[in-house]
Amino acid sequence: MNPVNYLYLAALLFTIGAAGVLIRRNAIVVFMCVELMLNACNLAFVCFSRLHGNLDGQVIAFFTMVVAAAEVVVGLAIIVSLFRSRHSASVDDASLMKL
Amino acid sequence: MSAPTELFAAAASHTSTGEAFQFWVLGTVAVIGALCTILMKKAVHSALCLAGTMIILAVFYLANGAYFLGVVQIVVYTGAIMMLFLFVVMLVGVTAADSLKETIKGQRWWAAACGLGFGVLLIAGIGNASLKSFNGLGQANANGNVEGLATLIFTKYVFAFEITGALLITSAVGAMVLTHRERTERAKTQREMSEERVRGKHLPPLPAPGVYARHNAVDIAGLLPDGTPSELTVNQTLRARGQIRDVSSEALADLKALEQRSEERLGRDEEAVK
Image 1: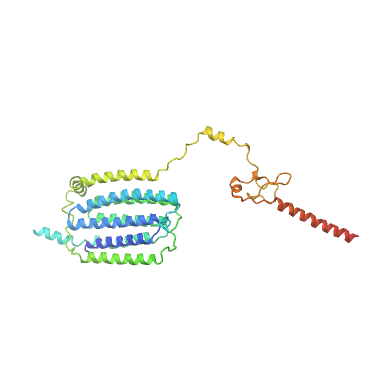
Image 2: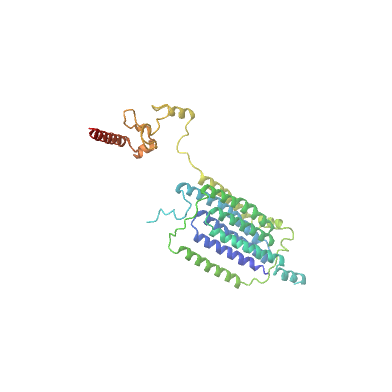
């Protein structure tokens, strides 16, 4: 097996995550799909690191994980405060600007 | 190029059979987990499927020679982030399933078509790239994976590392600010609460609803001895909404009708006797 297959898997997972962001309307599940996309990118980075034979890709993946952790903390706090004010986690319910 | 390096490069472009087997089995499970994440109706099931996918990705990191990242993936992602997700799911409501009503017509199919097209583009792009020879991490990991990563992070990427520290602190403060609830009024002391309790006219509990009436539902006022309904017996909220069912007049009318009918019958009986 060629290690390129890891890249194909990463592309597939990224696509599934992107489709999930478009399809789902529960804010928490949308957020989980974003996490899935970030993880697919990390897998691609790790595979590129193996391709080039240096550790730079792994360092970038490490930074991605740190940024993802920060993003999750703030995003979930926003979802909790949204739920407190609207009693719903659906992204469709936030339509105050709609005519 | 010396012969051993060439041999190594050739070996690195093909994985061992064990790794191939692991890839095909676990890769299938990872894709199924990802699909379940976006297809499950309840957020809890989605979170659990995503956690499974993340654990499999950790195994793939280990297989790709990223030992530090593999462990960090399990500790940070499945350990911390997914549990945070589960906590929020529990806070927001486990049973709250996604509404399946379409607000934009055909949105689901368009989204699926867009995802399919995007995936085809992405995979075709990877297929066209010339990724024939993999160098492998044997040389880079020679002094240990963690040591190699540490050397890079604290020399070449030290500035980015410092900035991520600032980012983490900012996000922690941001989360605290976002979820913090300001108290709008002063908390009452125990003394004030006890004084408030005995301030009204009724020290004992209020009379129960439905006393002497024909039903004892909470919205039916109890009757005083003279037959007039007492407003006190009904809950204040129901009184404010005007949801009191006043049956006293009905009851009196019923009683009057009953008496009249019995009188009529008695009168008829008396006539019959006569």
